[in-house]
Image (cartoon, rainbow, N blue to C red; front, side, top):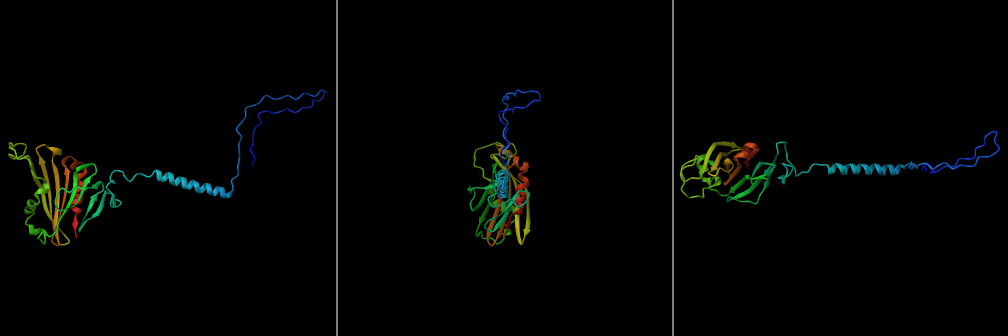
Length: 258
């Protein structure tokens, strides 16, 4: 449809008045403000379809742009797949073992212990970590062959750290003379799963400098086909009571060996 516009000026025709013989001269009317032309265009059916399709793609792009980032808290450690439940854990399968890994833990190349298979760190706090050690041909057919849980704990005492200071100190602050570190066993128990016995330990280690109030250590161990499997989990005391206890104990109890 053609554009409809308002002219910038108009000319008044010569009107005829009864009783007058003299024609009036044409007078030019003062120019008026020009108005923006209103253009009405009728689109074809094909153009309407193309525009509708374009609108759909534009809306989809906007929705994709607004999608939350997968790097949000709790997903940065998600290198094994999507989080499978609302509690924030990812099933992890290793060489003959499996457990639920907190989604906020990242794999690390650190290998602080011998026979270490994997090592994970909290992405906000490297003090909190998870290790699994595998010792093939350990010479035992079951965990009970190491003796009582307490006997086994003595075997793996190196996992709890060893004092490197050899100077003389007084007995104070809960530490024995000439000792600047201490370990307190908070809990020991066993559990049977699919014919295998597991030893479980909860230990609090402290140092004289009082760093974070100490370290909470969780340990689970069993033997399968002559191979010793040991899981160790650690958290600083302050973070332990801010959510790490729940996460690490869930991982600790989920540890299973084929």
